[in-house]
Image (cartoon, helix red, strand yellow):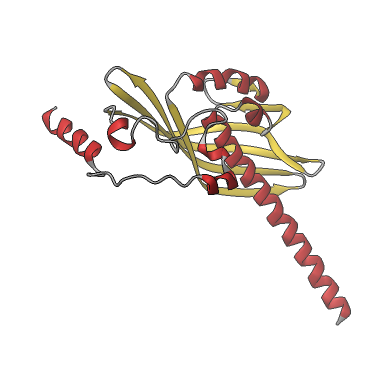
Length: 208
């Protein structure tokens, strides 16, 4: 009985370690997305080992140098949003081959409003565990589909120019609030027509 219990505990410990590793990698993937969307250079570099490699198609080389290159590029667009789904893992010792499907929107501002670049594909990674920490050792991307979408500048009609919960780059982004969100308790009058901005967009589409 005691031996069977010890064997069961050993199996559970192995399974628990595997779950911890998966969650650590998943957290790293999400941290990468936050870093590029918020243009946080140091956070982005922390996702890769210093000798890591990244081939994004438009850049291939050292991952930290990629971070130095791409953050200024992202700062020139109005906003971006990276979303992750369908993450799968294959472990081999202290390494994990990982595939994640991404959906990215880059919003470009211009006089006529915005043009959104929608981009879908997969991150094909090898993560490596060093001293108990998982980071990207090698990343390539597989692009699957792209499209451009033109939208009107209806931001003010939708939520006003000073909405404190609109995402932005830097320390003022509401994603940095964490438990300080408890201090955010504004009282706002209800909007007369929540869908005003969308009605305007629909009307313009019918006239075009």
